[in-house]
Image (cartoon, rainbow, N blue to C red; front, side, top):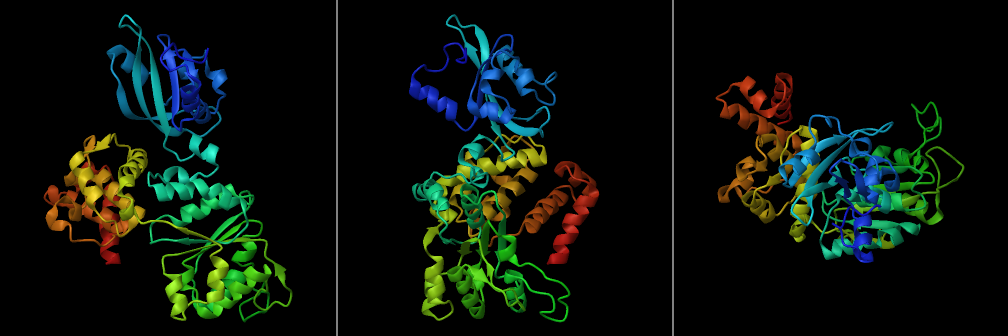
Length: 444
């Protein structure tokens, strides 16, 4: 019997929702025998849900300290729900996986606790949503925004075609995340995904980097070298920051897209290009075409399918969801039991305009998690420009090195310059503290 007692509704719609919810759900009786296991729980445990029923939860969902710390046992003994505990799930023959668990007792009609139900979420990024959708990256790209939700809904259809896609959006909005998702969902998902930043390649080396070269093409070309098009054969090539592509190279990219072939530098034979191209930029290509900085024919070749990813300031309703996703990763990485963000701190996070978009939000939450020594992130744990009205004018998106530096420096200042005390507070070694402070000074 899969249904745990009569706790869950018996109608087909409720059963379907429970079976296909992204979080793992299982229920046990007083003897810790699994009476129900949904698809997500079975996926995370690497076991068929039907095989889990009738076995002890320790056999199916054993954690690293199962004998000494059992959240379900505590929940049933104390007859109270427990939320957001981080544990490590032990899986035979598979990598361990960190999960965030919440549990609640199951009550009989007479008021007796007769079992417990546990909900848990895979924090490793490889859970049930990933398997269903086939795209691990978007598992962490949470949204409630109608426009962005519609884009995500359309991705499978977009991915199944072989048309060129142009991703538009500000820096930090997740353009590469969407590119990888399109690749994963496509028929080329088993092939390579190659990303190249057009703005980071020197102009004189760009042709050889993209198309490769033949031996003897120039002085130091002692042997053939494949380019990014060759490396992406049978897969997907992401041309990131394509707005920074030199004008002369634009014609060569256009020819490769039109002819689906290219010639390596110094070569005489044409090589087929079995590559799906996705381009991304944070620049206004339409204006660049009007100004003569970008080829019109290449612009239209690239924009067969155009996806505009909105900046975070236009979908602030996603901030709480994204904060929880980032905080879940921080709990594992920093080994801290941070449960939530206070309403005051969340208010400041919601009011910020995020010029660095999701990347900036990730830096802010990691900074706050480093400083927080309790279970709740308060405004005092946020970066200085988010703590109060006086600092709200500061809008520059900072690097992670600067975020770590400020957290470390403030800890040292709080302890009157005592670095040993600062290390104990931050949970890092003296060498790490010295490296954080010294590296930022060097970069400055």
